[in-house]
Amino acid sequence: MNYRHAFHAGNFADVVKHTILTRILAYLMKKDAAFRVIDTHAGLGLYDLFGDQAEKTGEWQDGIGRLIHVKLPDDVAELLTPYLDAVRAQNPDGALRYYPGSPFITRHMLRPQDRLMGFELHPIDADRLRQNFAGDFQTRITQLDAWDIFGTHLPPKEKRGLVLVDPPFEDKGEFSRMVQSLEKGHKRWPGGTYAYWYPIKEPGEVDAYAKALKATGIPKILRIELTIRQPSEPPRLHGTGMVVVNPPFVLEQEMRVLLPFLAELLSDEGRGKWSVDWVAGE
Image 1 (cartoon, rainbow, N blue to C red):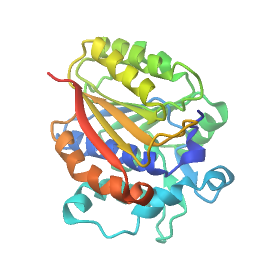
Image 2: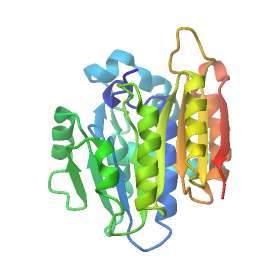
Image 3: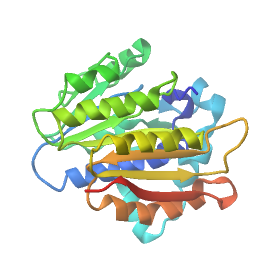
């Protein structure tokens, strides 16, 4: 599977993933103390939904395209406001054309005391990302293999923050690398929040990932999943998941408000399913 960001910008998985991101950031902002976000697979930062790559798949139409103008229940609207504000900030004329990736969403929410570190291995994407943030002293962009940073860039000096891990799943072994990186990172920074995105394509592979996480002995691992269709043969992407280590204490309940709505809105014929459970508790 190739999940390079540009082809899938704004799809159902991005909606769920970036909603979770904004809820974590909103919680971090409740304290005045500075925090740092480390985005390990940052991509381009901003995507043209009418560009060749996004238009080739058109996945955004069944993702952010369904959500951006729909009337929201009050409790859902309150929780989605930071995410939708970040999207609308890139489309000031009201017409949906550009979709912000995680670096732009994060940067939209940062306060003056907070910092963003974005890492991207793909040379063209890294250069574009660097251009997108040229002159921004709160953001630092580095071309580097994401899996190398867990032994060198943790903990951040702020001692508060989030490590967002969103691999493209171009190579085999990404699930194993995610577990290994968490073990390494958690040893260096046990108090940090870690959010790992993963595609749901082959359920057996996802189950093995959860078992490997549990076997690490790391506590406080929350698993959030949403599927938009039944599994199929041959396997295709039918769901999205995120594991959050040391999640905000409010995140579980917020997901129980948001996911039923998103599952119905984003799924094929309203047949979506969702779940929130603990891979490991206290």
